[in-house]
Length: 250
Image (cartoon, rainbow, N blue to C red):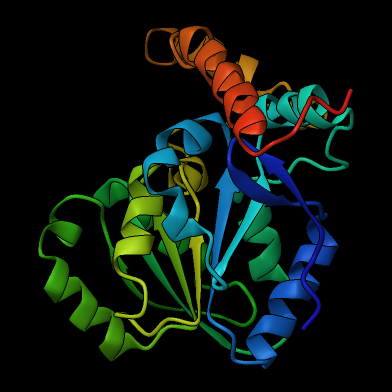
């Protein structure tokens, strides 16, 4: 199978792709029975997952760009932005709506009320069969019990909503133990689907300004992410780019 083109950002190989192309790639990997982990690289992911980056350089792992920070880092390092912003919140429902055969889906993570509401919202989606849920608290407290549930439910897709770096670390640590062909890291998706956290209007998302909307909604929680942590992210990207043996492409 031909490997898609990637762009190196912060020590990670990020796919240069769009929604339709990514869905087609996932179908090809499914049909080839190739296990897949789909991760979305935003600034938290790049900095928080750096400590175990080697485990994410694996044949199973696909990493795509998520958010304005990674987009600007691409412009800073390579002189070119990504053609499309991909994130678990928008992409995952598109993926589920595109399913061309009945598909077993297990939801894992988030608050109990959020994961339950998401499961209820998706039960009538064509070709989606919700075969289990486990919230990110009591539902995941016993890791071995969760793995047994996953093996018994035998889902085709596992959605993990823990936020980064926790969800990426969980996916890596349980690789090969649950038997699920496609694992997707979806961040705050269940909070948005359940209505617990409001989404930015569509026009704001098209302008790639959802981060600003979220900052306005939760300033105390997010102010550091979009200030101090963002500066640290860009510094990290420059440092790893040079460590990879590159001068800035611009």
